[in-house]
Length: 336
Ligand code: SF4
Ligand code: MG
Image (tube, rainbow, N blue to C red; front, side):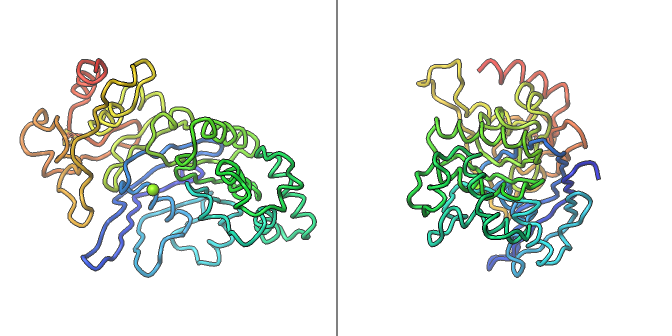
């Protein structure tokens, strides 16, 4: 495999009463140790499903998973539930948007951080408690010795988020998946948490998958970006490549709907008209075609009939020629 985490042709299908829903349709990417991959897309793009699947948190009864997920050479799709349980919280951990989904109201914060450490490292209660206090200090909780004895409701939102990060990192995971971890927080706290994550990555060397709909956060956090639309990757590259010279009409739309630092905030944003398609009956060809204003430039009916593929390296899954992508971006999109 090319990365520490290698995903190849991942397909995730849910069975629903109305029929099969392919939430992820042929996704491939690599992530290296100590690096951050930002996955961006609207809700329903498959970004969260992808990451729940990596950690084996999908419902096995109603979900079919095909393809390959290799973590440090180990295949996760065929791993047993017991093996996945060993992996979760130990070598791989997840932080969520809402810490209350991860923290129990019935136990002290310290106990909830200490528990995975005891379970996976087999250390004494006392040693695990000391580790929990140390982790609370690392994530910037004042008076960690006393605060470890508090319950989650005694913490502010930002502090709960820090406590969840402490819990996720207590076993020094190689892979950390962060799903919109700061969306619910105010801007100042958000910036603090992002800085904290970057510092902890330096210290622990974890590979991070960072899921968000916010390109500004991605620019700040990620090394590479993958843009997802309707269960597929539509564009992939380094942060610089994708943000400076994006090549896919959907990415152009995302960039245009972002407030710019240099513009006055009253400038109306131009969100992409229309909504993502139902994955029960996805549009044929390019899934973005019902919303795409550039498809006449491709000519013929290719956008409607032929699935555009993502080449292995820097690429966008779009039938426009490389020259068209470049000139449209430079002459029509960027000046907006
Ligand atoms: Fe638009 Fe066609 Fe490119 Fe899809 S393949 S993004 S419809 S131009
Ligand atoms: Mg989500």
